[in-house]
Length: 412
Image (cartoon, rainbow, N blue to C red; front, side):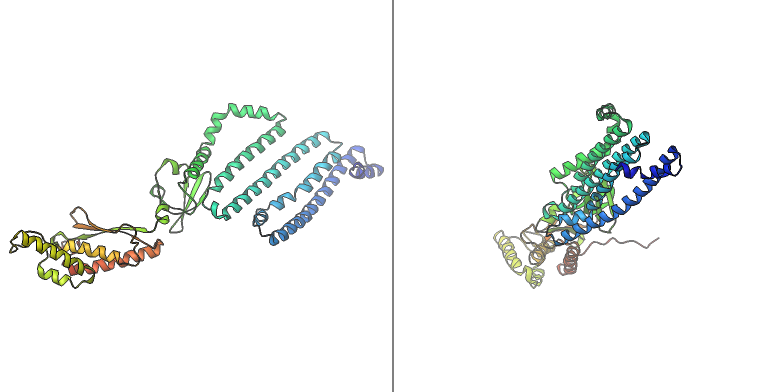
């Protein structure tokens, strides 16, 4: 190797150049040739290795090697050979310049550290992508753990680089870090909080990728698409992206709709405001008229028989309608609503179905519908709710009830 690296020096000296000038020109020519050879070699080796592994990956049933190719792991590995050749030749080429040689050795050692970090990073990203392709890991915060590993790797790499540049031992640098721990904690406060929060989120299973969460403070209302060390990304239903600091998911309240998505239905909880003045007792004629409504015919027969039996046994004076027991249009309508929901094909009958009257307000008497649709898809859910309330709002006049509507006076 010495003959090769000193070839131009001997040629130049034999042609009348001074030894000093020959040394400088020998290094310049040698470096130029080395750079050209290394560039060509790097491209050739990179293509050969990449093509070999691409062929292997295309034939392999395992997807892990596909992700290795995708994350350029083999591209980085292919740089090892040219870098090794450089480290081997540089001391021989700069034998006459020991100071420059020492600096170049440090520089190449730094290149080795950087290349090692890049290779490890690509492998970690490969593991991340591979694990995310598995059903059991799709909703886990893999990015957080990968980022933690990368932080440690960068810190270790920085320590080695610092040791190389300063010529001091690694322990000296670690001792200095211990003395600066308070400053380091302040600088990396958000990272540390995010790391702890991501562990809490994973262990407590509070949020998974794919969960629908709502956090009004940050305007978040959509699906979690990414959980990493510093933030959680939520794709809202208008396709905008909201970023929430990870540690806020453990320190502040938010709503996770996973329970609803995992349950047998999506809740319907909405009220109709009934005008209080339209609520009344039903006469015999009113009851007979409502018996034509099939959903409540059987109920009215039984209820009317009980009411009449009670009034007759207790000799109630029915010249005044309010005496004794009576049916009201509001009560019969509540029964109709429950019967309608129980008979509805898109309502889950195994979950709560209820029609209840809430406390009267200045805007009328609320009649709340509480049930669960068996279709949880948002678009389908909204259609089901709209269909139900279209029907109920249209049915209200049959019971001599009125919807409360705020009226504005045009009088000046």
